Structures are given as C-alpha cells and as structure tokens.
Length: 372
Image (cartoon, rainbow, N blue to C red):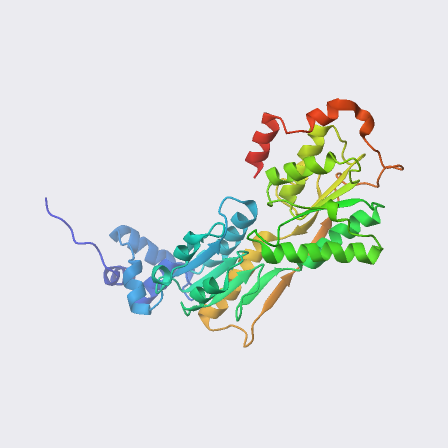
C-alpha cells in the first residue's frame, strides 16, 4: 500500500490562493481574515486533511498558544464558571487552556507549579481565587509571562474581582434592615482555607455593617464552614441546636446558605417565618431554594480577566497595574423576612426536634452532596 505524505501549510496556501501566514491566522481563528478567505482556507485544509502542528507554530513564533489557569478546585461551581468565562474569551483568539489544579495546601502544590513543567509551555497565567504562598508566587513570576488574578492580589499583577467587603456589608445590612439583631454568620476560615482573601474581606464587611447598626458581633454566632453545602448543613445544625438560636443566618456563599436551609428543613424550622437565611453569589441553584443573595457575575469575572491577559499578550495593556472591580446586586427572594414579633425559644418543640436535628437524613445528605 502506498502512503501519501501529509499535506503541509504550503499546500493549503497554494490551494486557497493565500499566504501561509493567512492560513495560520484563519485556522487559529484570529482576526484580520475576511469570512470569505477563512472559509476558503478551511475548505482547502479539510480537503487536504491538513492539521496544524502546535509545536511547529510555537517554535516559529515563540508563542505556545496556551494559557495556564491556576485553580484550587475543579468541581466547584464558582471555579467552573470562572474557567468558562475565561475560555469563552481566549478560545476565540486561538488560545487553549492548561488547567493547573493545585488543590488544598500540601507538597503536591509545589510540583503542580514547578518551573520546569510550565516554562516555555504557556504564554500567560490566570490565577483564579487561589491564595498562594510567597514561594509559589515567586515560582509563577519566574516564568516571565503575564499574570492576571481573580479575587486576590499578587504583586505586580492585574486583578479582577468584586468588592467582597461591600458585598458582605450589603447582605448583612439587608438582614439588619428587616429588623434582625441575632444574626449568625457562616464564613470561611481565614487561617486554613484556600480563599483567605475572600474570607477576610467578607468577614470585615459583616462586622462593618453590624458596627454601623450598633449591634455587637457575638462570637458564638460566628462560625466557619468550608464553602460547601455539607459545610453549611453542619454549621446550620449546630446553630439551630443552640438554646438561643439566631433569627437569621448569613452565609459567605450560597452553597453554605443552601446547607443551612437543608438543616432548617430537617430541624422543622420554618424559613423565613422562624429563620431568615441569606447567601452571597447567586449560585445557579439559588433561585430553586428562593434564596435571597448578593449577586456577582462569576462568568464575567473570568472573561474580564482573560481580556486583561490578552491586552498583555497583544501589547495593548495599560501602563500601570489595573484593578477592575465588577458590581454586585442584592437579589431579594423568599428566604428572608422580618423576625417574628417575639423570638421563639423553640424549646417547646420537645425531643422530636432535638433528635431529628442530629444529622440530615441520608436522602438530604445525598442531595446536598450532588448540589456541590
């Protein structure tokens, strides 16, 4: 059997009647190519079964066409939407994503960000709400490529995000405006989790709103979750088992707020008649739980960060470091209302409530796990 040599970019250029540079731009989806020319190049490449070589292209141009995206988790809603927003903006410019999942803090993180693994393999880096240690930041800077972050500050890097202090202030002020005074807050742990900046800033916003209203921040009503539905269930159960439970709970994420709603349902506590629950994010499942929240556009943050990175790659960046703060919005739904005229002690509900509130049913736990 006679083997046919694979077609090269010169063959496609001759068949389409254009230069090899135009073939490259057309097949990579870049601009400065008319729709008619692009269609002609694609038809010629299809007929000749030409497949561009990423390695050859990078050797010639010094560019890899790859953007590294550093995230602490792949499976959580927030990071999936950030990646989706970045992908939508970068792919139309011919870039591919290399997702670097660093996970929780540990020895494997240093390997994931190793200079030898990323050097000369990426044109730029997006760090998506993953707090990094100084040695990790130094590793990324040693790659000598543009870096843009979402949700955290890195020295010398452009940043995109929301005002987390203001978002938490808006949420707590909404509950205070309804008349609540015993308000629990479920946040991230500034000492241990991977969202240190977000945890610190949202806690600061909560305290600012309480202080402005003249309400003392009771330490026993401040709890830490792990930004998940299951974490919200655990904290919510403990709060509702208190002899003096709160009349409202603000969670630093909608997922934790949904967990609190699950705990309230298992405990037989009516929302919002006996307990108001509020979150921050406007998670895609928030409306199914009628959850009042503060909306942030997560996908837009990913796309905006990608746009800043493209400005660096195209040489059109601003002369000074940029910080772009995207707006947030209060979304009122049915999970919040004014507190009851007299705060219920809930001690008259007997042992049935205390035994039911020990743990969520297996079905509730399974649904909560899937909601993550």
